[in-house]
Image (spheres, rainbow, N blue to C red):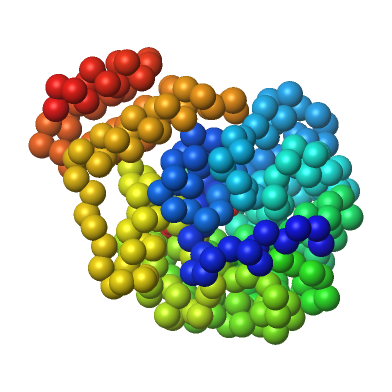
Length: 323
Ligand SMILES: Cc1cc2nc3c(=O)[nH]c(=O)nc-3n(C[C@H](O)[C@H](O)[C@H](O)COP(=O)(O)O)c2cc1C
């Protein structure tokens, strides 16, 4: 394994979890700015890379300041992953993650994402193929469980099936496929699978994910599972500074609330990064984040109608100046 950056990260590790349509280059830069020590891309199609799809290749663009950055690949054809991994390595990523957790119909409905967990042999083949294509550290992201034949395949089963493979890191989302975004977090399964992973890979990194919307919940995940760090996702909507607050809280048991002035600064920084972005996203994608930034403000309704039409940083400056 070449340059295993995972080993250099300060613990507890605070990662931006992959989010399709959300974790674009601009958002990843904002998250790094507020203290994420590693960021994942949204899931990127291994098939798209295998077939040199122009649109997929565009998604590989990132800014140096995002590093360390992990590309997440999804797909279901093991034989296409080695080439996809090669391309990802050439594009300059620091690590390659494989998606074994996505429940979205367009992925899981066709035998990819989380439904791959029902075929652990295939999961192993995919990991092996990625490792054939790259010397970069390879990680996996999976769910606590998925139903199969009247029983279930768990994260622990998955980890057992990977025995002997030098997996650098795992991120376990503690919810089952059957209730993918609202179930209670299964800390017990995260802990069991994480501990087993560490037995097999003593130098491995183990991250817990799911339901972390506050610094207290980040601490709870670490306390309940013994993980090395956490992956943040929806808790970051309109609050990328949650990274800063988690870091403060984990160190000093208190954290500073963000004021509207701090939030304006974050929105402008995000807009600057969106303007500079070279991936497929840009200022239009920024709009949904802007709406999240002002959520709960007294004049949010009026602001929203202006923010959905933002075309430039100057537009945004004008709107924010009036507040
Ligand atoms: C809009 C959205 C897109 C997501 N896209 C991905 C993805 O591309 N790859 C992946 O592994 N997980 C994806 N996830 C799952 C998240 O990484 C995370 O596991 C999940 O949201 C649970 O964390 P949370 O409760 O903190 O949101 C996505 C989640 C959301 C809400």
